[in-house]
Image (cartoon, rainbow, N blue to C red; front, side, top):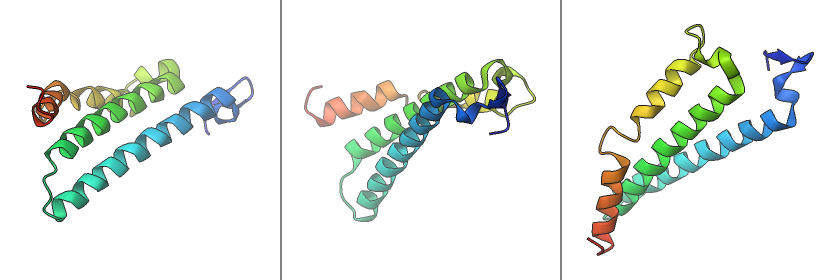
Length: 115
């Protein structure tokens, strides 16, 4: 809302609005799958599959949102003056740390009887 391009805030451009809407969708998706998994854990239900899914969805959505944020910010997103560069760098760790998303998929395959 603060960044101006072509004399208007970039948030008034339809393509930026769609990118921000996509980010909201991804954040909500990650939140909902995480809450569902937490409810299953609280209920004492076997939630190994859902835990793997939640980790993959949340970290992928985080990276995708950071990537979209970099696109919206353009070159300014790379400068140390903005938090976007740190958010983007941090988002790269998600799919790797805490059991990589490939390992999570291996767990899912085993639970599905495929491995």
